Image (cartoon, rainbow, N blue to C red; front, side, top):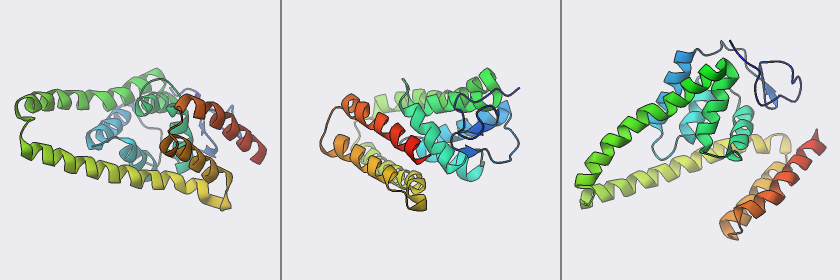
Length: 204
């Protein structure tokens, strides 16, 4: 049985099928098995991080979320303790199937990679010093960086719709403050988060 989303929608917060800022597309609700398989596929495909594959799976392939819903839900998960994508799987699973959905989504996300990492760790312990393996890992890291850049570009598209200015401006200021100026993350968030909320309230 589905439960109300922990993230109320702006239009009808009492409707159980609402997610942030948009109406959920008319799609059959995923079963526990579908949640487990979807997040297991994401985790086993996500070399260098699963953000790119989670967006592709949930937004582009399964269409369980819109691009705006994914961005806003993931943004909320970024401010919660723990891993972002793990938080996302728990909230997403609970949104559709309650506690069981959270367990299924988080289990699919964490279970298969854990077994795979244990196997790889044993192999790396014996062969990690080989130059060929080190060069291979360097190539994988480069590919992961490119994949992350492509995902960031896709996630940024909704910010530029309707000639929006404040969204891209906040994103640029945050990047400059943390990535260029190297200011402390808590200090930047203490200023950026209230400013972002205020800007969103003014626009609505």
